[in-house]
Image (cartoon, rainbow, N blue to C red):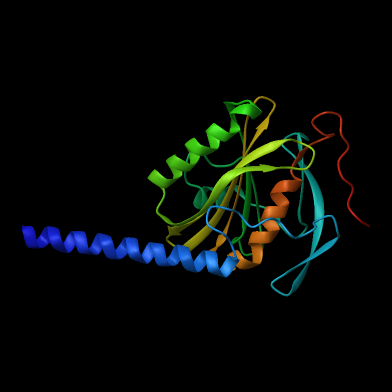
Length: 224
């Protein structure tokens, strides 16, 4: 029995060391400092962006009954109901999911109805981070915190890599107040594609605005 306990303890230590090495490698590859997210460096207000050597056209969309505005790749399509049921089998399935042609890059929106005020977003983000760490098979926790968005105050975010049946997945989740309740926006792709999409999704999340602006401000116009 003692020998078995020692073997289990050794395996746990080896797994923890592997996770630590993985964290270090991820941060080295992305040029990040411990505990700080890399700032967005892509301007999505131009008509095209380059991702992994491919030029991708952008478009503006209004979602959730014209409540929010977001800029995203024009080639992304709405995920079908059948695809969504397979990809998100939980009752917490997002109400709107955009995806690429292959279904490997996903951008999802869910106006949860959970009451929140902007002043409570920091605490909400910390709570969500603790919950995600306890229930998700996290391989690497990259970052969490608060950020500014265009014209609409603050938002919380979490960024991590988790294990899945199809391999490691990169997630970026944003929490924002919309009409007194939580707007949850999430992005996911393969960890192999993270380097290509990470700066793009950082910039995309910051473009999410209330239609017309929170305090009567105009939406920033895209370049022609």
